[in-house]
Image (tube, rainbow, N blue to C red):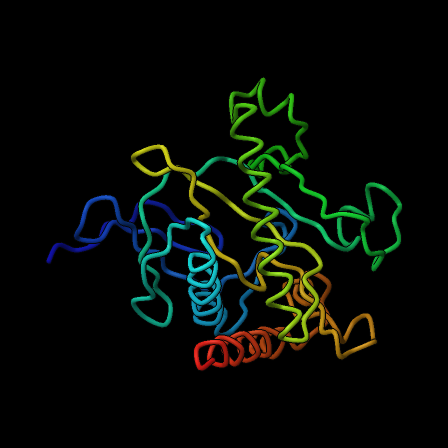
Length: 247
C-alpha cells in the first residue's frame, strides 16, 4: 500500500490521498481557531469528537437522500470521502438570530426567524469571508443561477433534517455552515463536516444564555468547559443514532 500524500492542511483538518483514485482521507485535528484564525488554541479530543459526529450525521443525511462525500469513518480521527472540488463558499443557514447576523442587523440574539435564512459567504480569509449576493456569485463565476438554486434547496433540506434531529437530542440548531463540492462527474455533493465547530448549538434544557452554549462559541467567547460541551453533543447525537437504529 502506498503512503498517503498530504494534499491540503487546513485550520481544523488535513486531507490526504489514499490508495484509490477519487477518494480522500480526512484527518480531524484538535486545533481550534476563531475570527479568521486571529485566535488560536487547542480543544482536547475535538478531532475525535468532530469526526465521529460528522460521520454519524453525514450518514444520516445520506440515508435521507442527501448526496454527500462521506464513505466511511476509518479511525477515531479519520474519514474516507469521495474526492470533490470544493466550491469556495460557506453556505450558512440560520434559524435563530445570533452571531454576525445580530451584529450586522441589530436583531436581538435568540429571536426566532420567520423562515430559515440561507446566506453565502466567500471562503477567503484575506477578504474576511465576505457575505455575497447572488449577483456577486454570478459575477465571480462561482455559481450559476441553477447552481445557486440547487445549493439553497439542498441547504434547506439539510436544515429540515438536522433541526428535527437535534430537537430530539434536546438541542436547538441555531445556525450552521455547509460546504459543497463537485465530484468527477460534476455532481454537487455535501462535503466538509457537520459538528460543534460548524454549528451553533444551544441546550434546550438550559435557560442561562452562557451555560446553554454547546459549540465553538465557548472557545470564541472564552466561556470555558469547551471540551465538556463537545462531549455532551457527541453523547446526545450517538445516543439518538443508536435509538433510531434499534427502532
